[in-house]
Amino acid sequence: MVHKMSQDHLSTTFAALADPTRRAILARLALGETSVTELAEPFAMSLPAISKHLKVLERAGLIARGREAQWRPCRIKAGALKDVDTWLENYRRFWDESFDRLDAYLQKLQGKEKRHARKQRKH
Amino acid sequence: MVHKMSQDHLSTTFAALADPTRRAILARLALGETSVTELAEPFAMSLPAISKHLKVLERAGLIARGREAQWRPCRIKAGALKDVDTWLENYRRFWDESFDRLDAYLQKLQGKEKRHARKQRKH
Image 1 (tube, one colour):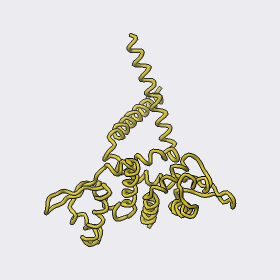
Image 2: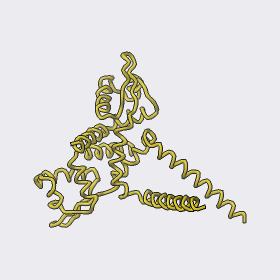
Image 3: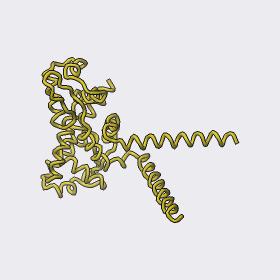
Image 4: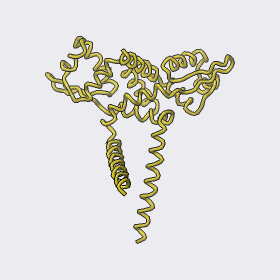
């Protein structure tokens, strides 16, 4: 059940990301939180159109909005994107050889550290 | 123009991923290439329904299909998912502190190696 819920959540996130304007909004918010008016400026879009996109992003947990009545700043939320990253993890080996090499290197380092710690305990 | 095209491509990819059945198909294909019939088995879905999902995945560049008339094996393609990973790169700093630490650590290591190389050249 939890698995199914998290799958639906991923679907909502991917659907929200499947739009260039919404990705552009996220890119803008990555620079810092901002008001809806400010956010709308570079898009040549009506405020209601931008608000609709923001609602989709908010429902997907990609952004959060402040509760101040006058100025409701939008900011990026990391959680949903982190879930996408976790999902991608299983596929990374299909393209990222350097990732494998780094992983092997870190395991080797960890091994060395463990041996070193064991040696120090003996002294 | 190239930028816009690649944005549309990302939208197509994200839209294709916004479905639990299509993500389950990818997860199966991550284990190895397989025929459509074999792929359909665990889904309790008709072959035409599965074929429709496969077409969406294929159009998004997420899978490729063999050209053999009888047995058209499906296999995963890394390119489109790699593009998602590249897109995510800009947002990773919002959740991955350990990534920052690793990055700092690797830069330190590189620095050490460079100094070491310079020393060796002097000898």
